[in-house]
Amino acid sequence: MKQDDLYQQRSHFYLSLPKMGRIILFLCVAAGLLTFVAGLLLGEQTRSWGSLLFNFMFFFSISLGGVAFGGMQDIVGASWGRPVKRLHESFGAFLPWSGAVLALFILAVRMNLLGAGRVYSWVADPHMLDHFHGKNLWLNIDFMMVRDLVSLALIILLAGWHLKLTTGRDIAFAEGRRDEAKRLGLEVATKLRYWSAPVLVVYALAFTMLCFDLTMSLAPTWFSTLWGGWSFAILMQSLMALILIMMFCTKNTPLGAFYRRQQFHDIGKLLFGFTVFFAYLTYAHVLTYWYGNVPEETSYFITRLQSPWLYFVIVIPFLVFLFPLFALIPKVSKWQASLTIPICGVVLLAQWLVYMLVVMPEVVPASEWSFPWIELGIFCGCLGAFLLSVFRFAEKVPMLSLADPLLGESLTQH
Image (cartoon, rainbow, N blue to C red):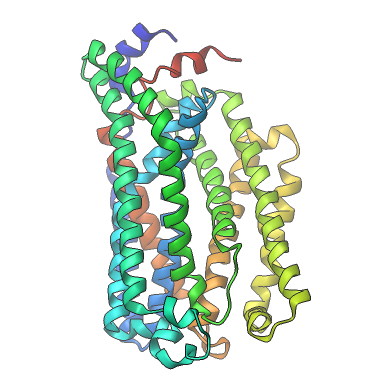
């Protein structure tokens, strides 16, 4: 498609949510809020805060991944993914909301608001780390609050800067300012190619800091130097699965005319690759702690080998590794909706269970955990808020990188 054709169709590249869909998503958000409040009122305070933590970390990581994946393509000047680049960048619209909730969670832990401080055993009992030199200095609630709030602020500000640059040129094009859009397109492409690398380094450090503090420190005597990379593997596998689902959901819109089998196949291959990468890092975790046999390290796994967490340990490897590994080998499974969507759905479910397995055993004793109504209710709220943010973004910004200099090259490739 030529630039003149894009210009004539520029008003067609926005996405709007039907009224009924908007109502359903608002009801999901309301259900999440009511579930959280009900959990607090029914004496499940620690469990409610833990559920809030892992659900928002799950969606926060996907939102960050959507923007970071765009930055990765900008660094190398990749043209293959330009038709879907705005689709996954739109996930970043949820970053300010999820970041705000995580910031409120951290403040609630600091003030022990409604039992939030009991989520972290080392906050509830500050003296438990007196004999762990180094950890007792690092795991200090005031120090943790400062570094994590700074990390959240850096991620949100840099992601906002990235989105402002990439969308500004396309908004100018959509409003009919073609010359300005062409100038901005070249300027932004050069700027992003130069600055995306240091921005990604900041993302990596800040995200690793948040993962160390918010999830790994739930078990304060246990640690993993692979935790940041392992969390990144969860992020990327979940991101690729969600991108494919969103591509199929928008295939019948004007955007779908720009999706070729190439894009579906390439995202599917990345999903396959990160499936293997996640399994590799998980195996590296287990193997290292197994032959190390240090009590404060093996206790982390022993806790999760008790019912009901044992069922998670058995099921998750099949859902997150073995099933997608073999299911994605045939080429058609990467671009056939009836095959790809179920595979991606299973991957997202499995990674949500992984986050639950990381957080909840440290928050709720195995004997007290029952049907996950709190976890599911808060998940519905997070999902509703995430999709509302994405569609609100899609109503204001063209969902195709109209002024991107590399878009034309992408559309001419086979």
